[in-house]
Length: 398
Image 1 (cartoon, rainbow, N blue to C red):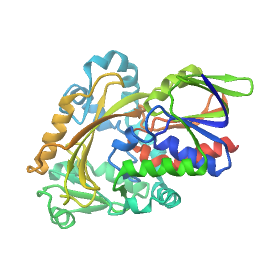
Image 2 (cartoon, rainbow, N blue to C red):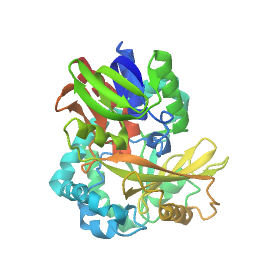
Image 3 (cartoon, rainbow, N blue to C red):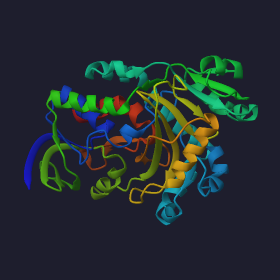
Image 4 (cartoon, rainbow, N blue to C red):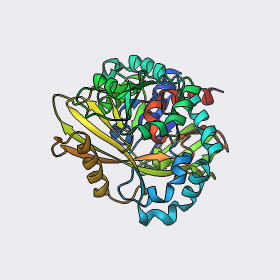
């Protein structure tokens, strides 16, 4: 076992850990980043690639609560559950149901809106700092509504976003087709978010972040932290091949963060959403920007040389293999929009760290500021990476 000593240890090399490491190194701190896999290769790579400053609505809403049983136990639903995981998920689901009540939903949306308020600006700044500005596209994001009734059903959500100053434009069916002429007609129209930014290749952005961190002097340790504990002058972490001593630690290990928090005496209501995507290699994209058919709960995401179809939620932990049914449903729904899609060039499944209220945990641990929590971002981890890094920096500087 090798012993490593540092000022700050960042546990987790996803987009949150990478962003925090870059920010802390800019503050002049010595930083070691500990990650067992290629940095940025998990959910940070496999997402819809959108800086979604509009995504203030939590997963749990009153509408979801009304239909929770039918959603969870329908294998084809945009929100489903692995039945084998139900016993262990019950406490999380009970909390999720509570957080979906009207008063909790509105409070959670307010907290998320506050976090997202400067998301686009902060990502533009970070991209410029790491030399990745050319990998961002500013064409916005489009929601589609299949019927007038589905559009009317979204009116409360639209009003709530408007309350928090989210830029959104209501489009009739003709305006949708003028914006995206290759889409089939939708009777309900669309909702356009003009300020949304998307990445032309999230994997390359992650590689640029890792390269920027290394240039800045962050030490990367390819290892998995198994144990964390406070010691007299800081924090001790035992990994598979290393022992790391640090003045402070940042737990940014995504879906794997809950076990480390428990070792410090905190039971955090963290569980896992299993996210899926399909990719189709093609030179000409059928859409120019991320497009979400809201009735199916996924995104068409144009990326470099390929169309990614990403989305839906499957609750079910980190140990089970990918569920082929989820990929089949994703493909079938994608073909309902674009019937000529061929077979996918590749598929993917990864883990989103999910809180029942959809609000990420970004705070000092209850035992003190020597350990900072930065996990549980769910669907907005990519979006909130620069903001989270800034918050972590401020906490460690205080």
